[in-house]
Amino acid sequence: MTDLEQYLHAYFTFDQDDLVKVSALFKKKTLNKGDYFLKTGKPCNQLCFIQSGLLRIYADMDGKEVTQWISTKGYFVADLSSLLFQTPSRWNMQALTNLEIFVIERAEYNRLGEIIPKWPETEKLFLAHCFTMMEDRIFSFISMTAEERYQFLFEKNRELFNQVPLQYIASMLGMTPETISRIRRKQLQ
Amino acid sequence: MTDLEQYLHAYFTFDQDDLVKVSALFKKKTLNKGDYFLKTGKPCNQLCFIQSGLLRIYADMDGKEVTQWISTKGYFVADLSSLLFQTPSRWNMQALTNLEIFVIERAEYNRLGEIIPKWPETEKLFLAHCFTMMEDRIFSFISMTAEERYQFLFEKNRELFNQVPLQYIASMLGMTPETISRIRRKQLQ
DNA sequence: CCGTTTTCTTGATTTTTATCAAGTAGCTTG
DNA sequence: CAAGCTACTTGATAAAAATCAAGAAAACGG
Image (cartoon, rainbow over all chains, first blue to last red):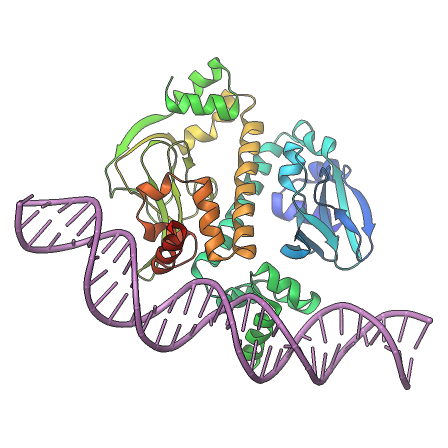
């Protein structure tokens, strides 16, 4: 069983039959460190599942890069609004490491409902789950200091801090590299 | 045609037949200023559409209220994760003014797919749209100063500023009432 | 209409965070 | 290994925003 199948099984509780049908629609791909999965302005025609490696999602604000999120093993990634509404992508998505992904084309993705009857329900719950995580993240910006946000992410996602340049983590927490460096020093003492 | 029907028509492009079927499932209700539509910890068993008035969504952090959002006319509101996963609600939802709403019970809501064949697709696009708005909001916290966030909201949602106590707007922008007061003074000059 | 409460404003001060600048540590690669 | 990167740290300073405290304005209720 591939990681993709394991994930689908664990997260969506697909049975063996559905698993095979769905995972057949995904194609394995690799990206090298620095390669782009997606660029701002282009249409997003694929959804990807990360098998291994790190993918940074960011926007370029007149030369200044703002990191929105870093996706790790076990995440699905796409520019959702671009994928569904065929609008231009708002994000760049670049491999921070060599990357193994499973990719499904938009056309196939849109046909999932025909192949697996319970897909629409599954998809709804998945989107709702994503939405809820976003709510939590917004709440962290409203109600926490920089230091608390750092702690919060560190508790939840410790692996990230070994693997990712701190400046990107700083950016996704809405602070500067200097600030995160000082917070980290305090934590160590 | 009620506002609910107009909205469903405009936003989801339902035809007349579907409109009638769907809006029949909603029941009109009124809340008085100060009443709660939902309280933290309770299950959210309804989805509501706001016909008129203002609904404040907030969390109580040991006595300190943090406003997550203020919903106005034309919004659908629920604690999505509670509604779909039957978990306890994370938010309080309180009427800031007298409120006219249309309410659909969870059971009915879950049956929409049977009644309207294209509902799952519609719902997916709706959730994706919500998700995208959340992404934008997160991005505003990462990449903007307090003053820029104020401007951004003011441009997009000017009516809010006449109708809502400024302290709530401050909270949803992640700043103090004093800060928003000073920003506002600058804007006027 | 008057007193009460709530909301908003203002000033003084402190805390937090950003910015600027310089230096260090750790990789990478010819 | 040395040169060149990149990431990270540190210090000094500036800017932004929070906090505290007091007063003004507006809204509300009898």
